[in-house]
Length: 251
Length: 187
Image 1 (cartoon, rainbow over the protein chains, first blue to last red):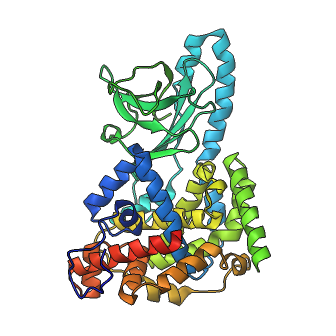
Image 2: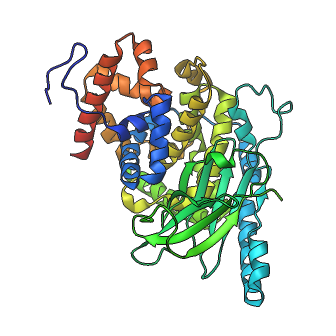
Image 3: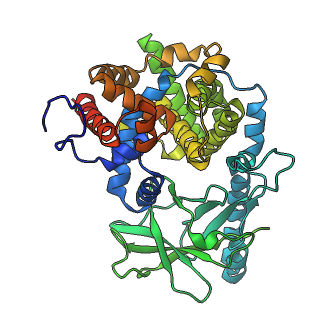
């Protein structure tokens, strides 16, 4: 690489560093979305992005501290979606007890999805064409799916934020079996499982919301987690045992 | 000062771990310690107080949901992690609004007020100091393009327009700057 100062366009610039440019935020909307989608499926890229975030973020810490309005914390406290998730987790323990008595009943109940209908008051503000809170339509509810084990103690929690078009999946209580990966699929009614991505063992996976979930209200699409060889299914379809299934719907 | 910063860091790490296990009181503790700094970051990016408060709310809901993904052993300080969450949310917000002119610098300056006391310690963060030194070492145009892009969430094209320079030149500044920054920070 030449160290000569560059008056204008130069032929010998360093090559594009996609992770750095993604973190910096300079990519075009299309490139940025493509990079964001890649994060969910490419752990090497995701790691590079994490390193660049760590490198560059201290820059914004130079911003002056400014107090937000005083009543913001009570609003946040009320809006915490995990309040409901916590309730759902308690429910899970209860249903696990039931499983011993009746696997069938437990399956039906655990396929139930818990919804937090008021979780996202800020999300509706993302639409700049909505004039005021009071005049705006109901926000898209943030939905939560409990992915219930068909065997063993693993359970996953998936949240769907339709407004932001983001799906998040939290890792289960039990890690993937040694040398294996846990892979998330969505299965449309009567359809073929479609790969969504690998669930990291130590942190939540955030991925763009699959288009299939774009409709309002209940969805018949089932989420399933299968155990696959390290690095994913060799066939593009689930090959290992399905360890959990669940569904988003509105209660 | 260094001891105060270390203490603050340890406290935040612990609070994040408690949040990960579902303790709302720990989230409130984090809020108390960091909300004014994070709000300053978001407001600096968005330039609109109401919008910035919405985003701050989203940030703390995100922290509540994802505190478990913060790993202190990876060498990222908790405040850097929190600031990354805040910036990402703010940039997402910018990306979701269309062609809206912003004046983040002026707007933020207008509403600036005092910092929370804990920040005196956190601002001495080593990460921030190293980054500042490495940016200083860059060519002025490179560092200024990087700063503007990072704070304002602007694409290459918008940045070229703003700086009144050809697109290729701006890309060149940024890519050279990033490459040098990487070398400097990793050395």
